[in-house]
Image (tube, rainbow, N blue to C red):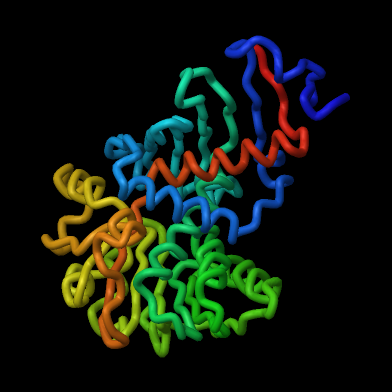
Length: 340
């Protein structure tokens, strides 16, 4: 069987529009994408967004039972691919031994509109979310950061550490807090597996993760209670990157920073207007990752600025990561060809 035939034996190079490539969660994992590759792809996606080469409406969010929610996220990279991701987040799944985040991503050819692939979105989401932290840190963190703090040691927290190692060459220590000892153990394994390995310091309280940390990443479960981090946590010269909306930081903490950034200003404004979350974020947004990647807005200006970046997640990050996944899958002949 040739790589073009896929696992079904049906060739992928037949008449356009008659088939697409399906990539399972195992397929995506088997590709072995490096975090450095994903960081580069996401940064490029941010630059293109900043240049106006991306059509991306605010994500549609549906509220489920309790803290569960679902989102539909779409983006069209002009002259390239278009994609949409359907993702569900059910925090209660963790207690059931199931994945909390599940979804599928559909990728189409941007010129012809023909379907190219459908793939599991769990790993794509984890990789691009971690990469978004690295993009924020590239422009907003001090380049000499040696210690980072992580509140929430789940998948997003762990991927953030992997990504920060890509852009912070002096990183040596990770301070963390999570009530789940298994999550802490999983982060410890990530730190030990990096080259060179990182030293993990486990904190007894959430507020301790910021001690001496040049970057503080938060990725806790939304709706778990009042925000545990106030304006005293972030030290002068540090950067906060929130992956959990306004779940971890109080309004006072966000407003006390010298400048407030985000991944997509339009999405933050739309989410705040919807009324469910982000009521406490500052009125003034200094810029987003597109502004930073194009140089339209300056990043860190000095070593004492306390900066905040709120990353809600962008569909363009999914599209550029999915494009990377599809290209690698084609090279290696992975996936299952499905008829349309």
